[in-house]
Image (cartoon, rainbow, N blue to C red; front, side, top):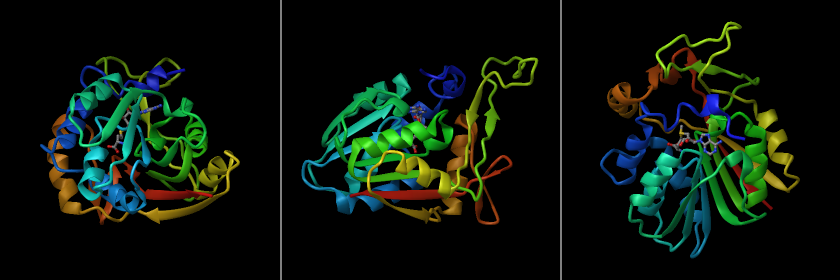
Length: 254
Ligand SMILES: C[S@@+](CC[C@H](N)C(=O)[O-])C[C@H]1O[C@@H](n2cnc3c(N)ncnc32)[C@H](O)[C@@H]1O
């Protein structure tokens, strides 16, 4: 079931993410540092006809970064819960076979081992059921899964309260009416969820330090007007009071 509150951030009338993703996908805006870094990780693994899943693909902007590095004729599948992003992705003429569809990553409906490589970047932290998403992703992937998400020593469930309707943001019992999760999980918890798929996996955590502070500042000028933004303090990334401890989780499935 789609969690309405938790998905209000994406694709609502005020949402400018779709346009930003689209501009990146067609090369009118810079590639994100994370899409460049992720493309760098997976392109040596891509073979002719490899099937690649991008879960939470937005307008397919990571595909642009992958295509810049790989000349293989792979097949790309992008899924996202926001229909308007999928519609934007479908407007683009891609160099490889690219299929986009609306789907909830927590309920991936592909068969076991459908994809050689799967990526899921900057999505897990925002989900209601990241455990289910991770399990489904491992089941659906044959060889290699890369996640980008927030990691901390302990598990933290954090809600950013968002104001969409310009009215009181809380119910009487001080529950946010609209919010987006910014959860951060421990390596132990992620290991546990990955292993719940009951596949033999080797798991590697790599701290994402590949960001260029100046580049994020430049992006922030654009983002400030359009979306929420990331700030740099003491060479660390913050969103409001939250320190963004980004990691890539590399999961090799045997
Ligand atoms: C922060 S954006 C990340 C987009 C892209 N992966 C990136 O790194 O730029 C989160 C994306 O996840 C999508 N999303 C949120 N919940 C989802 C779900 N349950 N299933 C699939 N996609 C979801 C949103 O629509 C949005 O496109």
